[in-house]
Image 1 (cartoon, protein in one colour):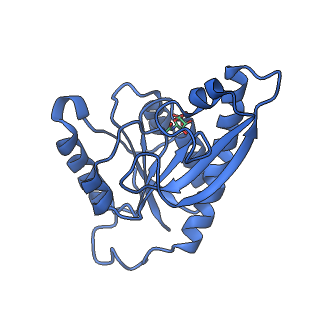
Image 2 (cartoon, helix red, strand yellow):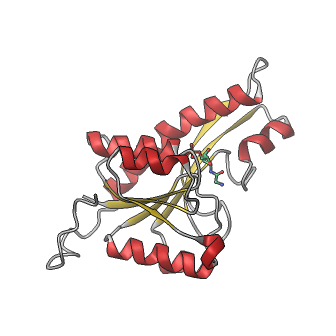
Length: 205
Ligand code: GAR
């Protein structure tokens, strides 16, 4: 069963949807750990309450290079096959992306290439576009960029406020991320024997 490390920075509702799905078996993956660049990220306590191992990476204290080195060590120590970004608001360096080439997946709350960046929903709202949506993609060396795995449109209706639009997008995200990851993992099986002979760290908790 593939092992996924999930990185968050905030509320962690996407992480929660994935973690719960991994627990029920809806998502055929094991969450190896949930990591955050912010100690105070609400999602960390959600993850811990659901029994996941949690980690914090100290960007401010240690700098990006050291924090990324700590992420890489955690990924390797926990034998994580995939790195799943779920509202992780740090830009990963090209070196980090190359090191885990093709193994980092991201969700973005807009129809990329439209509205990349930290405010995808707000930027689409301010632009007044009639529809926006959600993108799941493989991470390459550019921000919110890389091969697209799935997109789903969300229409902005006349009675939408920014808040209702956000709620619609988040609801779509939680379903789309689960579905897309499931299909992706099924199509990209990991070598189940690759960790044979090493300590059994299968549990992750
Ligand atoms: C999500 O909407 C995610 O798509 C977005 O952050 C939010 C995190 O919410 N990510 C980006 O904007 C990446 N550029 P969550 O913590 O509740 O999952």
